[in-house]
Every structure is written in C-alpha cells, then in structure tokens.
Length: 294
Image 1 (cartoon, rainbow, N blue to C red):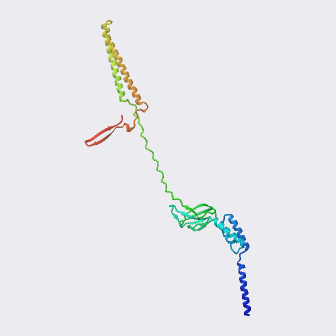
Image 2: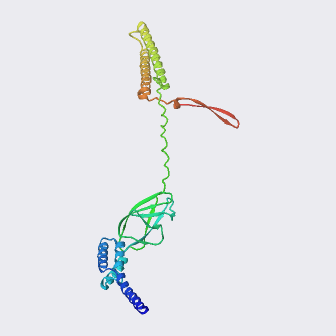
Image 3: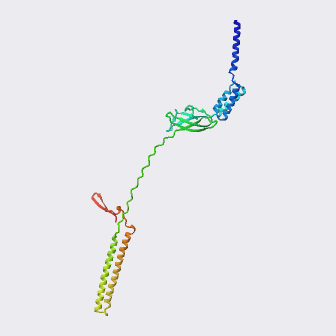
C-alpha cells in the first residue's frame, strides 16, 4: 500500500508540473489580436495605447515571430512618442509649483513636475488649476518625436485701474469788446476850431472889404486910386483863404469823426479803456501811477 501511494503521488506531481506551463502559456490568438490592435492604434496616433498592446504581444510566451515583431514596434513607438512637461506662472511672473494640470479633461502626471511625461501627438486641451481655484486653459499641438518640450502657461497680469478722464472745464469767456458809442475824437475838435476860425475870418474880411468898397464908391468912384482898389482886393482874397481854411478844418473834423466810429474802429475792452490807479512803493516814498487807454 505504501509503495503504491508513493507512485501515485509521483505521478500527480509530474502531471501538475506538466500542466502548469500549458495553463500559463499565452493564447496564440490573443497575441496576434494584440499585434493587430497595436498597429491600428499606432496609425491613429494613439501611441500610448499602442505601446501597451505591443508590450503584451512582445511577451516571450507568444509565438517567436510575433514576439520579435512586437518588440521592434515597441522601440519604434518609443522613438515617436512625444514627451513634455508643464510650467505655470502667476500674475507676477513667479512659477507655481502646486498647480494641477489636466489634459483633455484628465489629470496629467499629477501636479506640475520637472520630468517630462509621454503624451500622444496631436491637438490637446490643457487646463491649469491653482490651489486658490483660479484656472487657465489653452490648446496646444504636440508633434510626433517631440521630446522634453516645456509648455508654459502664464496667468495674465492684473491691469492697473485706469483713472477716469479729467472733467473738461470750459475756458472762461473772453472779455467782450465794448463799443464806445458815437464819439468825436479830440483831433476832430481841432478841425472844428480851425473851421470856426476860418468862418470868422471869412466873415470879418468880407465885411471889411464890403465896407471899404462902399466907402470908395461914395467918395472917389470912379477915380479911386489903385492902392485903394488893391486894399479891397486883398481883403477879398483873405476872406476866400479864410473860407477855404474853415472848410478844410470842418472837412477834417467830419472825416476823422466818421473814421473813428466806422466799423467799431474805436471799440475797446473794459481792460484797455479803464484807467486803474496803481501804487508803487520806493525807499523815498510812494508814487501813484495812473495807467489807462485812450
């Protein structure tokens, strides 16, 4: 009985060892399926998933040809697989170390790290979330075989508050010119005086010449001497000259008055027309000065 039991145990152990490699051996169809799936994922630029498939079919337990081919594909994917790391800066330009990075909605290698991590080539949406909850998004394009790329995302600096524009103040109104009204300038009065004097002289010489002529007609006419006649003619000439001087004086007065009042020629502002007294103090005393426009 004991001998038969030992033989049975030996057979059982041998069967167990023989059955273990058969149970642990990978499925041939699974190896081929993994190789096919890996190639499809590689063509779709999903290199991370393709790499996992190629590692699966590169197992030594798979058929030799399949294992060898999958191993070479793993090396090719490793060469084409891009790697990148992220850098974030706050509004002041300081680097943020405790921010969380999300790529296409999924966490990327935990918090920000200095070591580059693999990523599939193509367009990706990147979002950085700070500890205080503020976030920043961007879209990046990752190219195949791009290694150790650093993607930097910086929060925009706070814009300084722009002060409101100064209120516009209307300039003070310009002093309006005030018309002096109709007036006769002083030099026009000189012309009036000359005209009056000429008129008086004309009347005086004319009356004197008339009186002499009447006297000569009653006394010596028609045999009056040439001296008597020349005296009368001289007074007549003087009367004409006086009349001319008087007319010229009156004409000057009229013309100068018209020009002084024509077109506001004599308009003056309050500042230019006023005669404001001013007091200047010196060592010897004060001096009162009068200034003004005429």
